[in-house]
Length: 125
Image (cartoon, helix red, strand yellow):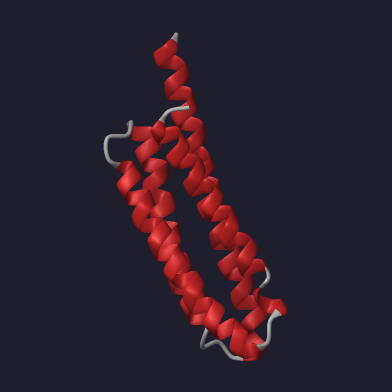
């Protein structure tokens, strides 16, 4: 694999890890949810920034998937930050929304990986 393929796979793996951590948030006590939400928000922002860097020099279809993933990750960062101040009775619903957004980001990153592989296959043939 080349460096961009490795970087795309890393970004997708990081997105999957965020999704898993968000899924576990409702198992924690309120203080831990607040602390973990702030951390997850920062990680989502960092991943969005990394994905934006990966967009540079990519073919149009790969870049579009990355752009959509970055936008979704920025929304996820806002969702997770809001979890820190969400009333406990609303936590499960807000957490579900964050999970859905995290999954959409992983889907976009997966599409970018697939588009990159397809472009590499075409270049080799």
